[in-house]
Length: 310
Length: 220
Image (cartoon, rainbow over all chains, first blue to last red; front, side, top):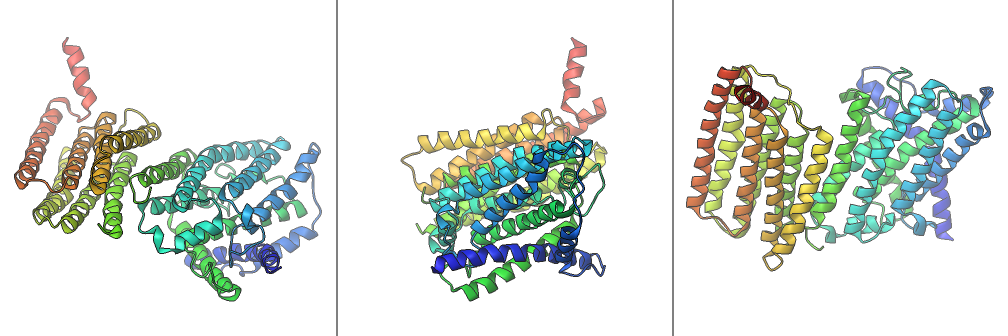
């Protein structure tokens, strides 16, 4: 019963916190650029506004185009609620597997790319093909990262990994450092942040994520925007849950949620700082950038073989 | 041996392999020299830690040599050479950076597979050090093969030598005579290579090693 309550609470928590995190990152970025910036709750207002508007559909949009936003949203929401945020005793702990989460995110990307292609505009096509190019490197990278973590923790379940990471048994391992950097690179690419993609632009030649959703409007766009926020929250919680599990394992929910809010704030502020300090990359540099993540994952796995305890 | 001691030794040796990959990733000469300096400094830390856990004070001298000569003197001198020669600062590679990285990962896997099998009986620390040192050596050789510019080939040579020192320190300390002679031979090699670079430059107006091949072909 307790597990069910925790799981339900988490489902609602991630949904409510996701736009707040996006708003917070935007606010910190604006302040770093010496601008006033929009209010931190602006994403909620945007969502409310979009939900009230009518949907404008292209004449040749198929059923897939109308269905895809909901599929994207549902899969992202499930994935985000599987990652332990404030407590590890979740009802669906047995499914909170890193490979399952990677698969859910993979199907999200698949539907998004299909929706981008569906209407047949050239921007959608560009966006989808670039997204697939990024994915073809990001997915092997994340699998190598999962593999390394699984070798250390002897499990791919997130709650078990958190517990192992918190125990003294894990020691000082360079592989984990490599994996952390790799995961951050993948997270930046997957969330369409600078330097891979710019989330605040509609400049046609450089965009990836925005190009795919260019044809969406009204509630469809609202749902997709919410899914994008959820994905950002998911990656921040994932990194927090694996690499900084303090306050997560064995603590009661109150302390856990306080720690979670602090972790989200720190993660969001660091992301904003990084985005302010770096410049957007050329699209053809992106494979090298993501290739580095793949290489770090591979190297992390290889170095484990000469480390202690394997 | 304490687990933490081993972990720290592993951390430094693993970082050395990582920095070798960072050298393969660079596409500017100055950045390459900075990463090479980092490579030598990581080596110095690694050797220093080995000296500490093996109680081998002679290794501290190796540490000092690695830090002062290879971490500071040689990179600064190479900086000067690049400035003096006024050469192109972009690194021209024979094959792209991506395939080079993949090859590099293959070499690391190969050296681990070979070394872990060959040294099954040996001490755990020595095994790990020798396996990672072989990877660093192979990555240095890979760098020499895939770069056209003579300066980056020199850097590849120096990083290969760093790998050899790592291997030697892992094997329960290296006789001091050997260490001194290796250090001096590297310095001599550096001087010779420096003169060589100037000579190539004087004659062919470039330090691109391919120019030598072209020249030989026209002679035949």
